[in-house]
Length: 632
Ligand SMILES: Cc1cc2nc3c(=O)[nH]c(=O)nc-3n(C[C@H](O)[C@H](O)[C@H](O)COP(=O)(O)OP(=O)(O)OC[C@H]3O[C@@H](n4cnc5c(N)ncnc54)[C@H](O)[C@@H]3O)c2cc1C
Ligand SMILES: *[C@@H]1O[C@H](CO)[C@@H](O)[C@H](O)[C@H]1NC(C)=O
Image 1 (cartoon, rainbow, N blue to C red):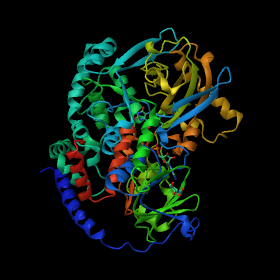
Image 2: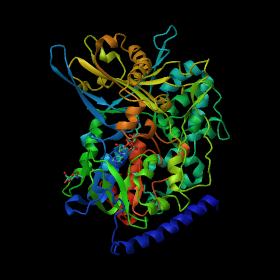
Image 3: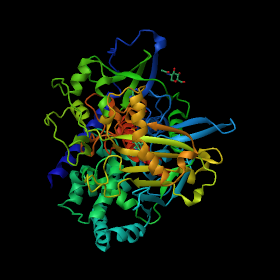
């Protein structure tokens, strides 16, 4: 028996012991609590709110967790979110602009994600699975589309335009052969075959079967063949990077065009090149994009509709569960020994008692400052000495240029395996530069345009001079043009367009600037030029059609979304393996936790966190229920 298999069996046994323990603790009275955010808390009863589960943050991770707990486990949930809008990175926002004749024009913008697969057709991604499980899949109408546009060297002599069509063989026989040649096609097919075994777990194991913590394997026993498949693949394959498939020993991608293409794909998933992106995620995309009937999906009404549905999932039924906006969480409260989470203290001074536990959806780098109780900090530090730790950045400056690290930087204190060390040293991928524009669309033939473009400012291969590849600074620009699919996002005769550098805007370029300064505004305008250029390569007279525009910087991300350094998320190698913490009744979810960045990924971590709040037995019954209703 392999050592890994032994370890797994051992964990299963431990899990069953924990299961038995779970039964006894549920009958033990909760010990009396002591508040440790004394500086904020007040004794007044009116300032105390009681819930079963309190959640920090209404990103997709926290909302999925809350919706599951409220709807499927009958828990009274309180979600507390700093922003006045729910959704975190994925929130939608309205803008009202005065038109030519003084009329009110209302536009609906997506602030972040627009590309999702696996919502309109099976196999469903974890987000769609959560919507199904909470009975709200009808709330979101998905508009499938089959291709996106590529523009290389926009507005230059050698400008190149092509389409990426999803589905079987279309990409392989189209651009792949055209640009990469026959050998690229052969390599691509061989690579897909080699990575196919990594896909089975994601396809066969539903998100609702996941749970964080020691008993993670119990519900997975229901999916034994897939579980055995995963075990045979080994931890390296399920949690490791794609490097062994790019550069050996498992596979070597030799064709340069294909390597650049894989890097570009990977970069949009992880903010890192392919060799530093999750192997399982890469395998999944390679499988999902090129299967028969594959499609991208856009939610009618914008991403905000998905967020609305999840909020409804949190609040539906008569339990009094609620997403409380504009409610910043000052700290997570614990018992005096710091070993168990008991609730939250809000910035308003109000205390939230969380009878059954706390889920934290705030970015992992924020965990430390959410604790005021020294004992709890000790527990999170595994009783090692508390110290200042440096957060590593993916974007560094070398020879005056901003470049991305192609290798994981070393950690000063690799032996410090405490949760806080893992969170605080977790490498931060790059940030974003946004350009949201509302355009007068008179005379534009929308049907002749794509709903999404990837514009490579310096070409797919990046600049020869700088050797920066597809992941170079502000090289890959996403242009979301959703009105092609959904005219309801803007008044008749107008459209919204969102261009952004996704994960390729270094934070240090902006660090320390005063947001009200002229310098800051000038930098915004000058750096956004490349985004304008990307839009103009699609709509040449876009600037003169503009009725309103807004530029968002890494500082905007940091401030409004509470993303430290405006980061896209943790580097692949640094995801926490699951959301468990050494503090009882505290579980983490979101993009710092396996499986990492992305809408489907955080829906999965939200689901794992929610299930970890109930006993494996309750989860098992829930899986039976969903199965009987043919939802899973
Ligand atoms: C511009 C952009 C484009 C993207 N494009 C895509 C895409 O096309 N496809 C895709 O799949 N993914 C995409 N992503 C990634 C995806 O959007 C994110 O990975 C995901 O939304 C992160 O969700 P989360 O729940 O982990 O965290 P967040 O969205 O960061 O949510 C965390 C929430 O916690 C709140 N919070 C933090 N601290 C506190 C506190 N102390 N008190 C109260 N609240 C607090 C924050 O305000 C925030 O709302 C994109 C991301 C961005 C930014
Ligand atoms: C959260 O919302 C509920 C329901 O509207 C309300 O009763 C409660 O006071 C709110 N909590 C806070 C802290 O605002």
